Amino acid sequence: MRAPVDTIFAPLFPTRLPWVNVPAGKVSTLQRGRPMLVEFWDFCRPNSLRTLPYLKGWHERYAPAGLRVVGVHCPGFEASSDEQAVRDAVARLQITYPVLIDSSFELWRDYENEGWPARYLFDGRARLFEYHYGEGAYDETERAIQELVGVEDEPLAPVRPEDAAGATLAAQTEDQPGPYSGPYEAGGVWAVLAGAGSVTVSGGGTGGREVAVTHPGAYPLIEHDRHTAGVLELEIGAGVSCLATCFTPGLA
Image (cartoon, rainbow, N blue to C red; front, side, top):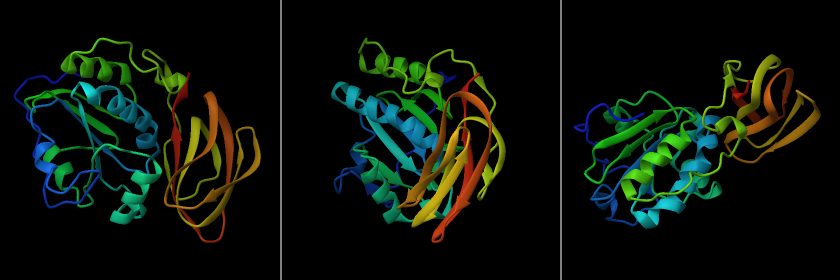
C-alpha cells in the first residue's frame, strides 16, 4: 500500500541495540541516501518464515541497485527472545542482510507496529513510500522497490501458488496456543516448538510422521496444495515444548 503522504520519516535505529551482519560503527550509515526496506519479523512465526524468501530475493536482486534490506527481529514467544537464539536463526536461515535484535520492542514502538510480519519501504530521503502488513502483496512491493531504484524487470516468481497476485484465499483455522489436535481447515499446519526431541504428526493425508526438533522455531507439519479440511493429531515427545499450533492460508 502506498504511503498516504510523503512526510512520514523512518525512525532512527537505536544504536545501543545488538545487530547481526553489521560491522561495528556502521549502523549510522544504514539510513543514509538509499532506499530502505524494513521488515519486522520473528523466527518463531510461520508467516515471517513464509515471507523470508522474498526478502532474501529482493536483497540479492536490488542491493546492487542501491536497496538496503533491514530485518528487525521482535520476539513473539519466549523461545525467540534470547539474543543468541536470534543470531543462530539468522545463520541457520542464511540471512545476509542486517538484522536488528529488538527484543525490548523499542523500535517496534517507534514505528507503532502492530504485528508480524510488517514491511516498510522508504525512499532515499527516508520517507515512507510503501508498506504492507502480513503475508502477500509481494508483486506490489517489488514494483515499488523497482520504482525507487530505477529497475524494470519481471517480479520474482511466486514461491507458492497462494502468493500470486490476485490469488483467492480461503480463511484458515485460527492459531491455537500450545499443542492442538482436532479438526482444521488450512493450506498448511505449523507448530512453534522449543527444546530437543521429536513430535509425531498425522492427519491431512499424512500417516504418522516424526519431525525432529533441534532448535527453537516454527516447524512445518502438513502442507496442502490448496485449502483443505482435515483432522490433526499432534503428539509432543519428551524434551520438546509446543508453544503454538499455527495454520497458514491456501488457495480457495
